[in-house]
Figure 1 (cartoon, rainbow, N blue to C red):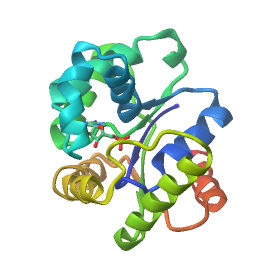
Figure 2: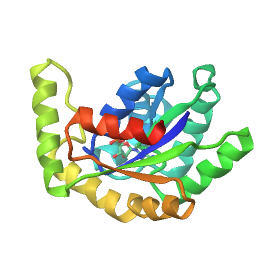
Figure 3: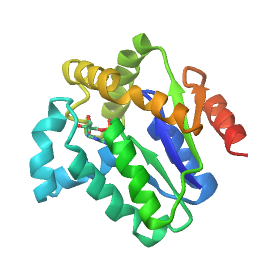
Figure 4: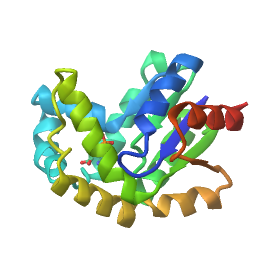
Amino acid sequence: MRLIFLGPPGAGKGTQAKLLTERYGIPQLSTGDMLRAAVAQATEVGKRAKAVMDAGQLVSDEIVNEIVSDRIDQSDCAKGFILDGYPRTVPQAIALGKMLEGKGLKLDAVIELKVDEAALVKRMENRVAETIAAGGTVRSDDNPEAFKRRLTEYREKTAPLSEHYAGTGQLRTVDGMADVNTVTAEIEKILA
Ligand code: AMP
């Protein structure tokens, strides 16, 4: 099972991807998580990505295409994977298509979580409050200014992906405003 989750920051892509990894026994490949790990380890990629990420802007296509391609080659992706936060631009989607073709792999579905943008800032604030309550570390781009920038980046660069995948006939849309379990059930119906 090879899936892509689309949707703005805070739509619940990560939450749903995590639930599906358990159900299908396939890993969640979050480019945001991979980049944050690279920043934490101060790798070359991490050093190049940090300032861009903190500003809520997109890291270059070249960097993310390469980290995804390397990750897909790892043995735990043999049964499939869930892409969360990638592709994020039409050129990334085109690169992914070529990458998968080169590896002899096919996508099963592209699932878009549709949400009301006004609710997203509130969700981000809740995520920050929950992280602090759990004693965790708040993401450096989870602040109102960077979050607004991430939403703008989404509107300008990522939203056109819906049309791209509608054109390939792979796009499925789910109401991301419903509660977590209802959203999961809707996704499972699509995948059944
Ligand atoms: P996320 O955890 O998906 O919200 O990603 C956090 C940040 O990582 C984004 O705001 C970008 O700076 C960067 N990032 C994650 N995935 C990508 C991607 N596919 N293309 C470019 N930048 C990305």
